Length: 266
Image (cartoon, rainbow, N blue to C red; front, side, top):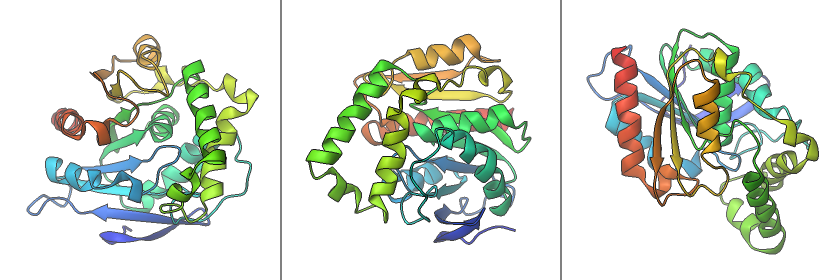
């Protein structure tokens, strides 16, 4: 199995998922590491920008990026999304995806919701192919600051041109926005909590977070430190908000490259 390099679509669990794959560096072995990138709650393949290319160049690894169902140009999903949508992705979609793309060894790299999905996968499955997880601005618990920022996003979607801007990237923009926003703002979502899974994660974990992240505080890092089986490698970037890979790409790339090198050596 496997997928072609470049842009395309892959069928997973009855869903048509948009993807982009950058091959390993020329001269790399056929068994080069693979980095699977999992986007944020309003992200998709396109919204990663040129970061996947820079990551491939910096590490020499194969980089695979995909848009989850409901995002980008992937298949739409019915609304409302279940509050278990991140667990569902990690349990039902990601295992099939890794098999389909011939993932042999490497890391899962997630941002925000995608980081939480990577953590859930590592907590649910003792997958020997996954050598580590790198989490950019992860959520392990729901904080007041998270809800406040997501409420602000709802107001912006209703009263500004945010929807028009997002429509440049998402074929089903209302599905993309409401699937994320409505779930997080459901009162029942306040009980969402990944701390019981953290002790089950056996692989090395990296956390990269902006010190001014408007969607989460250092409590997220503290959760991993207090509940994890092993201490995470933490990079806390001053003056950076929720998107370190856009706001501080060089520092983020350096941290990711070092982490992957250490994981490969181990």
